[in-house]
Amino acid sequence: MTQPLNTLGRDPSVSSKKLRHVVTSCMIGNALEWYDFALYGYFGVMISRLMFPPDQTPVGLLLKSYAVFFLGFVMRPLGAVLFGYIGDRHGRKKALMWSIYCMAIPTTLIGLLPTYQQVGAWSAVILIVLRLFQGLSMGGEFTGSMIFVVEHAPEGKKGLWGSSSSLSVLIGLLLGSVLGMVIDAVLTPDQVQLWGWRLPFLFSFAGSWVGSALRKLTDDPDQVKDEEKDQPVARKSMFLGRLFAHYWKDMLRVVVIDVVVAVGFFLVTVYVMTYVQNYGQVGYHFWANTLSMITFACAIPVSGWLSDQWGDITVMQRSILLLCLISVPCFWGLTSAIFGVVLLSHCVLSAVMGCIFGPVPSLMVSIFPRQVRYSGVSIAHNISMAIFGGSAPEVAIYLIDRTSIVVMPGIFLVTAGVISWYGLTGLKRSRTEKTA
Image (cartoon, rainbow, N blue to C red; front, side, top):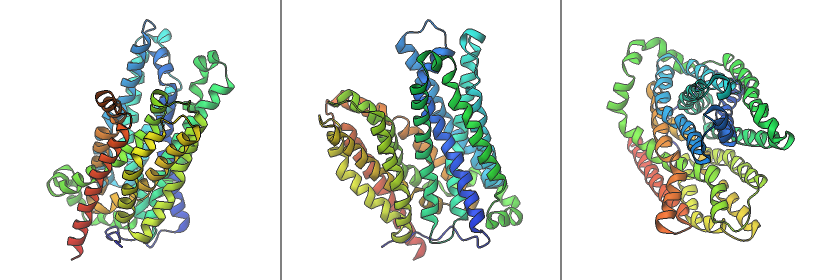
C-alpha cells in the first residue's frame, strides 16, 4: 500500500467553517466554468446563427460554432501562465478572485450580446473576445481551486476534500445541460431563438456573485502567507525561469498522468452521444446521458476518500487498470441494439472515469512545492487538456474512419490509460527516492 508523500503540510488554524467556505466557493467557480461549457455546447450553433452573417451554409455555421468553442482551449495555457503567476507571487485568493470575475462577467455578457442584425460583424467580434476571456479564466480556475482546497484540508482528508474540485466539474455540466433542456421544453422554438437562449447565461450572474462573496471570506493558508512575508524577493524571481529550469520533469509528469484524464473526460462526457448516434442501433435519450453523468459524479468522492486510505497513486493505477479492461467492451456495448446494454456501458465507463478523477487534485498538488505549485500544476494540466482533451473526439472519429474498427475509441482510451499508468509509476519511483 503506497501512501502519498506528505509535501503539502497542514494549516492547523483552518476551522471547519472556513474549510466549508473554501470548498463551496471553489466548487461554485468550477461549476460556473463547466456550466458555460455545457451551455455553449447546447446553444452554440444557434448563437453562431445569430452572431454571424445570415448567408452561411449549415456546415459553415457548425464550423464557426466549433471554432469559437475551440478558442477557449487555445487560451487555457495562457491563462495558466497568468493565473499561475498571480497565485504563486501574490497569493491563491487573489488569483481565484480574478479568475471567477474573468469567467462570470463574459458569461453574463454573452446573454446580453447584440445580434448580427443589430450591430453587424461586431457581434461576432464581441463573442470571440468574450470566449477568449472565458478560456483565459479556465486556465487558472480549476487548478487554482484544487490547490486552494487541498492546501486548506487537514491531513488524512486531502483526497476527499480535494475531490470536491473534480465533482464540481460534473455538477456544472449537469446544471448547464439540464437547464438548456428545460428551456427547450418550456419555450417555443421561436422564443428560444429570440430570447430564451440568453436566460441561462444571465442566470450565471447569481452563482458568480455567491461564489465571489464566499471567496472574499476566505484567505490563503497561513503557510502561504508566511512565505509571502519571508521570501518576497525569492518568490518574484522564481516564476517561469525557475519553474522550467528545476521542475520541468514534474511538469512533464503531470502532462503524462493527465493524458487519461483529458482523453477519458471528453470521450465519455462529449463524444459518447455522437458515437451512439453514428454507430449505435438505438436512439440515446438525454436523460440516459444525464444518468451516466450522475454516476460519474457519485464515483468521484468515493475514490477521493479511498485515496486517503490506500494512497492516491494506488487508487488511480487500479482505476486505470480497470479502465483498460472495460473500455473496448463498453464501446462495443454502446453499439448494441438493446438500450439497457447501451446505458449500462456508458454508466460503467462514467463510474470508472469518476474513480480516476477523484484523487487527481490531491495528487497533482503534492507534486510541486508551494512556491511554484499554482504555476506548475496549472501550466502542465492545461497543456495536457489543450493537446489531448480538446482533440480527443476528433481523434476518435479519425481513427474509426482510417481503420473501420468501430471500437477504436475504446482502444484509444486504453492507450491513454497505459501512458498515464506509466507516468504514475514514475511518480511513485520519484516519491520513493525522496523518502529513501
